[in-house]
Image (cartoon, rainbow, N blue to C red):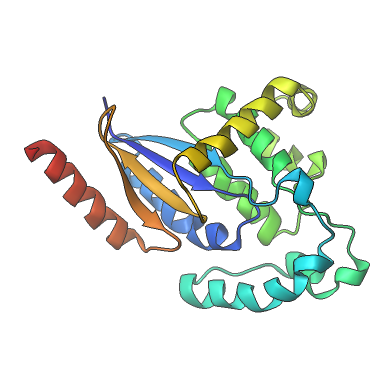
Length: 217
């Protein structure tokens, strides 16, 4: 089997947004060398969904740490909701973007990294509400996916189950924070290559060391 990079992320995770340029570059450089798979986490499950005001205070400090460490920038349209929670109608929930990823995987299984990064940008820079299906419309045009068909699938129980399976899989992999990335080199050997933010050079060195060990082992 070809080595497979498995990216465990959550669309609402600010650190995943900061990591998105790194994982995207890893994919661009290695998509002909490795398979890539994106698994959605359940950072904010439906049963834990609350108004943005419940986490706004935390994000007001945390987003600056992400910017300083990663160099990413959060957009003013996103930050408006963070600093004006009393005026916001946001109820963040990880389920719809996870369902969207499950649907997208059927259309473009080899481009899930790209789609994950686009979802992160749509939320954290453009300030789109990922619990609203309209937040996905512009991306459907980009990926040449029929809008009506996609919107219909968003309410299909099959894809809701697929999203729940993704969440269960991250738990099975013992992922306790996002982003977490693995490389699978055989049916039985899976190695973690990053947890939290890592730069590309560090990840590539880890991959090279793992592949060398697998070759000699």
